[in-house]
Image (cartoon, rainbow, N blue to C red; front, top):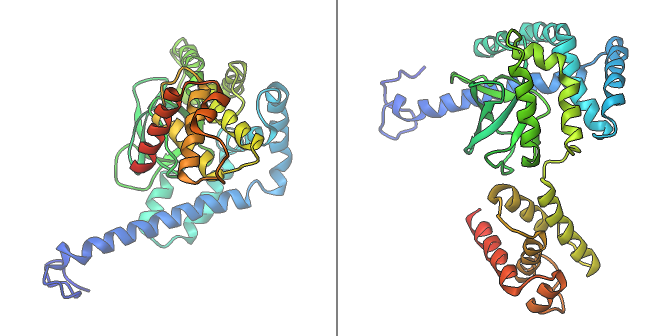
Length: 328
């Protein structure tokens, strides 16, 4: 074994601690994270077992009756799965962890699993975003956590999210990961979420965990009554995308790449437009100039007229999309 103060065997001339020792640390962290991800993935592949299916389906049915007019069936089932494991039958999760700990040889992984006994539900507002983590403030108090990002998809400051969380396995305080479903709510529903938080504020002697367990269905019903249907986009953002898709379909064109870019632009940049069609027109002109679809036999003026917007409004958002794409 190479001593930390000995010359690095890679031949760099530096001490080992100043050179490849750091690379080794990073590698070990990755190995640990891979093992933890495997533990989570395997759980959802193996559970619920046949003997617990009936109980799970009973819980699903109790949720479907009040929520099926608001949310897709598949979404209800996914939400209830976490509720079943972590609010109603935590013994299933804890029994699984005990089995996994007998298989683990790495002490650091065992330490993390010992702290994973009780995932907790978390509803919060995103107050900051960086490459690896979201900064999220609990809607029921002053607690703020760092939540590991699951993808590179843009997440705007100000949106709310829901998930069950566990410590992420690092040595950093208040760093967590989402156990399974990480659900983002469009900014349209901020007032409904504040109303739910106010309801908890009146229950001074109840913990957040017990309140969320007791009012889980009411939380989703409240959002449904506020117009939430399970999507991640605001009504305005949906309107922009629908206008773009309708134009492409009408003119026998298609471009998943353009739609994905416009989605990211809307979510990340939060453009302050008065009309949905202004952004949609700008997106079509941008798509034509960038070759995202087969060229149209239409001038830019004709595209603006089709959307019933001014050429200057269309050009504004074409320019913003160019700048956004250049900065990605």
